[in-house]
Every structure is written in structure tokens, then in C-alpha cells.
Length: 87
Image (cartoon, rainbow, N blue to C red):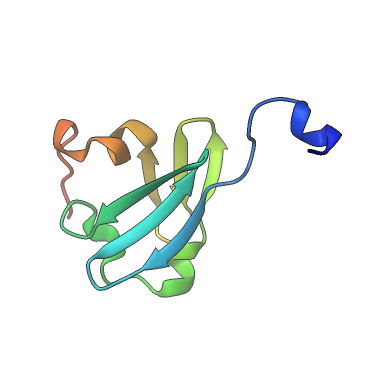
């Protein structure tokens, strides 16, 4: 173990790790989440580069600037609790 591993919480950036015809996988704070396109329709027709371009403006909040999509981690974990409306 290196000394930097002892410094505290994981501060890694969110990362899209895979995209399939069904949805995308997102790695966030050491947890992998599947975002099905049925629940997150904004990603279905998006260019692959735009899907991979994800930022974390502040903890618990993710933003895809190329798509102008904002999602809280609570929404990602439990989409049934936060009905999403696509226009």
C-alpha cells in the first residue's frame, strides 16, 4: 500500500465504463451502476463521445455537458423513485 492510499476518501472522477444497446455502466465512488436507456432515454441516441464525457460538479451530482443532462446519484441508484420525463 502506498502512503497516498492512506490519505482519505476516494476522490476519483466518475467514469462511463461500457455502453451497450441496452444502456451504460457508470463507475462512481467505487460502485458500478447500470443506467438502462428505458430509464435514462437521453443517452439512447447520443454520440458515444458525449456519453463518456461526464463530470462531477459536486459530490452526488453528475453532469454530461455535451448532452446538458444533470443527474443526482440518488436518481441513478433508484430511478423508480424519481420518474424522468423526456421531451
